Image (cartoon, rainbow, N blue to C red; front, side):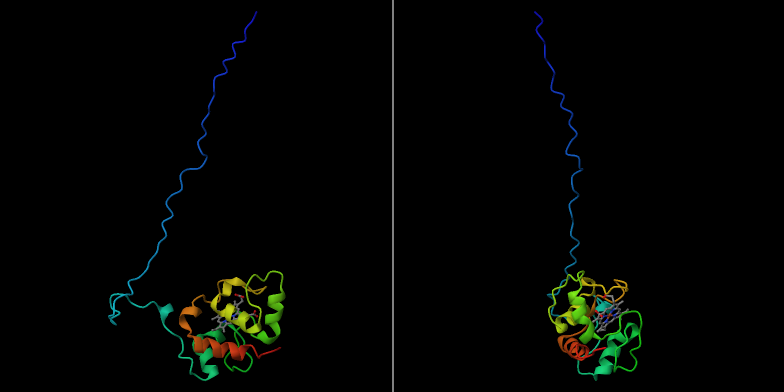
Amino acid sequence: MVVGCGIMGVLSFNFGSGKPPKPPTSEVNRVQEQTSPSHKKSADPLSITDVPLATGDEPIDKLFVQSGCPVCHTIPGIEPAKGREGPKLVLGTNAPLRMADQQYQGTATTIREYIQESILDPGVYVVSGYQDRVMPRWYGKRLNAKALDRMVSYLERITD
Ligand code: HEC
């Protein structure tokens, strides 16, 4: 009788887990010390992107000019605003079309909200035919609520 000596052995090829251990995702969290009551800025110079662009009390055309929008946008009724880097701002007409676009992933449901979103978070929806990352992303830091509100109120009324 042949007794199969079935010692197959346990060939345990240990391929390991396949992946090297994850490096600790060190969140570079540059939380600045903002607890100091000192008004001195010498130790921590302001970055240019922190400087407010307007008070919000300027005449509307000045408000747009100071904010730099005319460099890239044509805005009907704002004389110097003849820019062509971005779309002509006729949001009364275009905002509903953007929100209805299948590519639209933002949260706006009104023209007003769409304009706010476009200014504060331009990457949420990039108008077809235009480049992302051209419109600055720092408007939320450099425009106060009043300035933003007045621009939005102006823009929402413009139709093509
Ligand atoms: C350096 C150029 C640049 C500047 C400055 C700029 N934008 Fe834009 N903007 C763009 C471009 C390019 C787009 C289209 C791409 C996109 O949707 O992000 C755009 C898109 C928009 C849209 C969406 C338009 C649409 O038809 O759906 C709005 C609203 C807007 N900008 C408002 C403003 C306002 C208000 C300012 C000033 C506070 C401003 N932008 C400053 C380049 C600029």
